[in-house]
Length: 422
Image 1 (tube, one colour):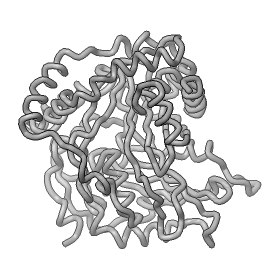
Image 2 (cartoon, helix red, strand yellow; image 1 turned 60 degrees about the horizontal axis):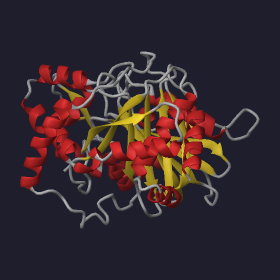
Image 3 (cartoon, rainbow, N blue to C red; image 1 turned 45 degrees about the vertical axis):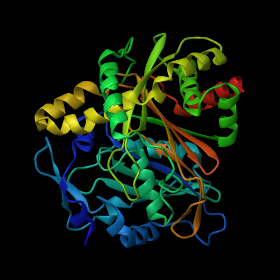
Image 4 (cartoon, rainbow, N blue to C red; image 1 turned 90 degrees about the horizontal axis):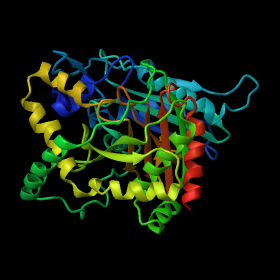
């Protein structure tokens, strides 16, 4: 049975949500910037290798052989007759005219450009870009899929499957899950909490275009975990602190005293081969004014306790799935646009698990690390994403230049914040 036959059907409301909130100014695809070690390979990776690897796995790649059709309000997945490989798997060479590698700044600019292009709805909603000429002995893959296909966790699983690696279910068998009664009670409490949660103090500037800036930062994961432990915090708290501190230092516009940040959390079990969306967002208020960074982290650690109660995420998931499925399609579209974006939060910070083991891409290129690519929500100017990947704290940041015009500078200031906390 083909992947199209297995997965064709009506798009669940939780996935259609991200079609409704997408616009020309806010493309909504997720993905990963995968860094490859080519130093011991006979040749750099090629699009022919990538096409061969994807072709061999199409039967196990949910929705890679499907496109959307039908009503814009609640479309369906249908089989796509033939893939346009020249579009789905392009190649980019960043080598400069003088023969030198283009470097990470050129790669960041390419990612920003690709992330700003909406994926056309008349073909399967994914791309797999092979990038050479990054650095000596380093190439990259930019994988993208629409948020309706998968969220960040789903994209990691898709990539791991493509590279013949275990998915994120490995080692998760013993993770406790709430029972039906706890979900019911937690959902009731969470709905009341969502109804009374704060709204942003002020909106941050946005350009109303799809222009983006992109940057990355790679640190030692154990060092970041130790920093968090020493401060009585969690890694997500440290990421929130680094984000607020860096924004305070580099924002091209004045910030309100506090920001309301959307933090996606796991809201459904990860299953082998699972696609779609399994996360839900919880809002955390973080101080963004001038203050010593240890004080900022202490305030964030106290405020982020709501991330660990589980009630809001249960309620948010219930609204995104059960309630949304009962809405008429037109009303669901209005609802999605009304509750998601700058009216409800100032930006997004996501801390996700990645592979804790060595992964080899296309049969011969060890992964150095992988950085998340996350869309900027409508009406907000930033998103920060972290993958804990095989010993690395791998962070990416995407910004709207109306608020932060230099994402690489943001990443540098983020690192300084962590240095001050240490």
